Length: 304
Image (cartoon, rainbow, N blue to C red; front, side, top):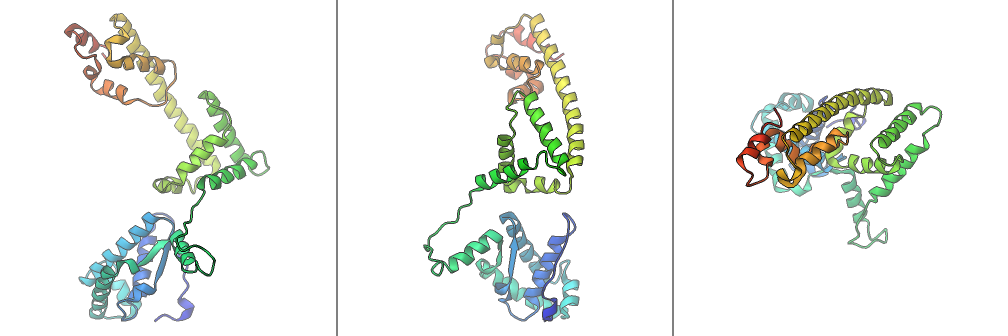
């Protein structure tokens, strides 16, 4: 057993540096240090997301199975740290793995929210709460408050970079014929950012300064503008070809293709609709059904 002075440990690690490996190793050290197959029920591991908790459980059981089979990338390190022979360590791993599978619900690897919820529910009577109470988070209000605090920093000394970014965002809204007010789009961005599926995207911005963000934005805008200008040119050329061939909107399925081309040629570009993508990859599929053969032949010339 470790001395009490070594019980507390802080691990600082950036993304991709192997912190999951280190945390799983520490969990297994705690679970295998004693000859107690139910030691895991006395260990609490907290994560931020349900996905991370599920991955942590999976890694623990996977590594434990490897240990029980006499292998794995943690066998030698655990032998050294726990000062156990390989035979004893494998025996403990087998017993622990079997017990964890039989008592899976007792594995306390959970989110902070789940832990607090469980803790409060345990003391529900003492806190004068109903046993079937529910905890609800008004995330919209939290995001709105966060946006308010962000906007309060605009124009304040020391926040020039953020002020410039928000001014640029407002100008972009105006360029796209949208409301210049930024609160609503910032709220929508906040709602999207707190989704678990966006966790990696948000983490990727963690070490980017406002100045660097502006630099990246300018480069992206240049790249986007080049693609948009090319699409405008191609759209105008396609419209000219359609006019030269004396084709009407009614010659196309639902008339969508020429309508979209006119929109793109005038600069109103948001995204390439599925119809246009199909038109670019399989032009004949967008011609109106039962069209005469000569019309189908003409349609094939639009992209030439």
